Image (tube, rainbow, N blue to C red):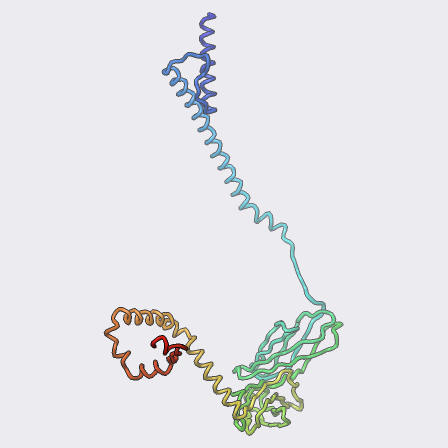
Length: 347
């Protein structure tokens, strides 16, 4: 019995050491043991099978964990929206304490834009009677300035008017604002003594007065659509600022903050302006997209011509021998400077 138990014990130790050597990847021979190659192969084969079973069991565990994680993610994806919906908190923000309310008239279907500190705030369109209103604009305490810009429905001209009010300590309401007529020019640069047209829109049937900075005044009456027109001529050379005001239902419109500038050029200013316009047209022509392929092809074409002249110069002798080419080459050729002792050197 002791021999049998010793044999079993020795076999167990051999198996254990073989497994340990395989797991640790140490395949060195085990000291103090005599094993045949066949026995060692059998032990290694058994150990490898056990390791593979262990690794396969771990793979199954990993797939099980992965499935559990996916299940939790699906449950969270479907349950989270309803859970977060219960925690929605309404957020409201308000800039300003008081309200600005405006109403008035300009011209039928004109666009009116409200700006504060140069920033767009609100826009509206006048009705068929030229009436407009802007209400419910939040303003801060101490608010004191705003501007209204109007553009007629045909986009012929515009008007820009700024207002200054006492610092706001409550709601600011302004009614009956009669904005100045829109104003545009057919040409803002004319020759001295030339003419241009000034036109725009206001309330239908209103009396319109055009003011020039030289003190000249022109008056006309708007038609049934609010359109008016002036013919400005016989102006001396100089700069002129123009603006228009209207008189309607016993009330005069406001004066615009911005005016239009008209320039009448003298004869020498006209020459300079003409040269500048020609140069600008040439630059615009050569920098246009239509000539883009030409700028790419031109260097290639020049290189091809130079290559042909280098390869077959005898074919183009008529060019070199032409009288025009000879004349220009002689005219632009620098004269040869004689040497100081040319007579002595034999030149």
